[in-house]
Image (cartoon, rainbow, N blue to C red; front, side, top):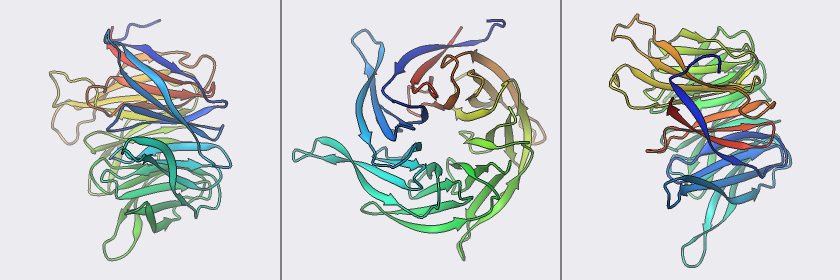
Amino acid sequence: MDEEFVYTLHNVAELGGHDDRAWHIAWNPTKPLLASCSADKSVKLYTYNHDGEGTLKFSLATSIPTGHLKTVRAVAWSPSGCTLATASFDANIGIWEQELDDDGNPGEWECASLLEGHETECKSVAYSSTGTLLASCSRDKTVWVWEVQPDSDFECMGVLMEHTQDVKCVAWHPTEEILASGSYDDTIKLYVDDPQDDWFCCATLTGHESTVWSLAWSPNGKYLASASDDKTIRVWRRIGEYEFKCVLVLKGHERSVYSVSWGVGKSSPNLDTSLGWIASAGGDGFIRVWDISETSSSEANIPSAKLIARLPAAHGVHDINSVVWSPRKGYEDLLATSGDDGMVKVWRIRET
């Protein structure tokens, strides 16, 4: 290491099993499960627990042969942790639930619903914080909002045609029904529901000079982070109901930044000022972790960012496609990454 960092990333698990690049990962919010998806059209579910010595062990729980005809590009858990959504290049979204056997024990994962409507490759899928809405986006330039109904039924509430190019990602606000999307057209769009009418675009954020690959809201919902092909991460502050302003540009990646995740970080004496930790990864193979904090209560004040950890060659020579903090209580110091090597890796961040 050419610099000393406050924290170090330690490898906890290396999870193989995919026969092609691993695109995306999602931690189950309520159960010890980690889902990954791949160009091999499958979803793997890994379980984890502490062994007798207190070491965290990960193992393959099951592999779901999704029946998707092409790459599974993204996965998302519902807030209850009972349902998994898959977005595929075959233009469809699969909704997966675990069957119960006659004794009420969990059995196989079955496709409970298949959502059709996108014209071409689905790139991302996300559940709202209440689990009542699902968003999807596609290379067909649209964002769809679906209402989740009983018995795995879904109703399309809106088709948003605001982007002029391929839509790469969707992300819901942590507490409100505000949806963000990022696109190959270099912009971020924000959408809300008009109670009198339909979903509509309430804001467009510009500043990135190339594709927006990934979006992540801050845990407190006051900021949005965006990762781009222009090698930067931008941090946008909410300054009005639907008004956002870029207050930070994080640099350091030498290639495209494909993924960004915003975790709660570690409890510190300055809890009031800490906004959590941003993890980023992409084409240069580095994982970077930034501590984001507000220096005072002044509205004009710009938050500060400190690079607290950096790991090169996390997947060897391969691109990293996804980096995600664990949302589960007690496991907030865990990060998972997936790469072009087909591997899913789990890391723990520790003080150096």
